[in-house]
Every structure is written in structure tokens, then in C-alpha cells.
Image 1 (cartoon, helix red, strand yellow):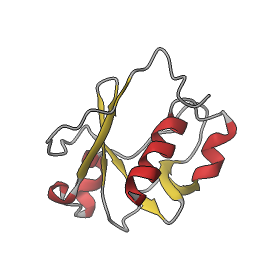
Image 2 (spheres, rainbow, N blue to C red):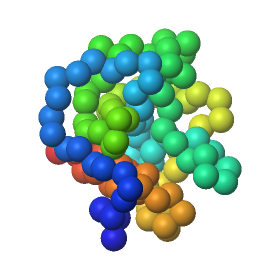
Image 3 (cartoon, helix red, strand yellow):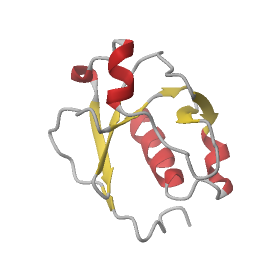
Image 4 (cartoon, rainbow, N blue to C red):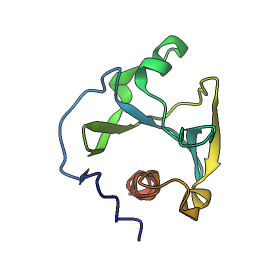
Amino acid sequence: MIQDIAPHVFYNQYKNLTAQPEDMAVIMDSRNLLLVKPDGDAVKYPTFAELAPLGVNTENATYLFAVDDMNFFLIDTDVKPEGYEFTDIHRTYSGEYGWITLVAATAIHLRAW
């Protein structure tokens, strides 16, 4: 099941936070998520530190949730840092993405809400 992410812990409590450079940015294009190109275990979301040189403003980011000590924010932008690609959310359900699947599914539902 996608919610079985142990040893990671999912925190869905709302927090009034501003995105920091180390926080993860959830960028979506329809039903696609911007993720680092899969290369072994290197699947991840871009950080705001990676987006800052591209002119992304953290003031427009909305806090979604946290996994362990990683905060995830939704941001509406069309930038695409080098090394990242839009991945169909259904591809994350294959099992190869691990806990990223729960992040993807939750983020896309919160975006639609």
C-alpha cells in the first residue's frame, strides 16, 4: 500500500511556513510531477535552492505536508531545472518510487482540492 512508507513518517498537520532553500517544491503540469530523472535511487523533487537561480519566488509556495524532516510546498511555475523531467503520476505507482508515491498522490489530490 502506498501509505506504508516506514521507516519514513508522513506529517499531514497544517503549518504556516514559508519555504526555505532546503524544502521540496512540488511542481505539476496537469497530471505530471516534476522529478529528477530516475537514475538508480535518485528520484526526488527539486528544492527551492535549485529553483532560486531560475527566479522562483517562495512567497507563492503553499505548505502541503512533511515527510520526516522534509517539508513539501506546492508552487505554480513553469520552470524546469536541468536534470528534471515531468513524470506521469501513474508511473510513480509502479513501486520503484517508494515513499515518493505517497507524496505524489497526496500532492495531486491537495492541488485539486
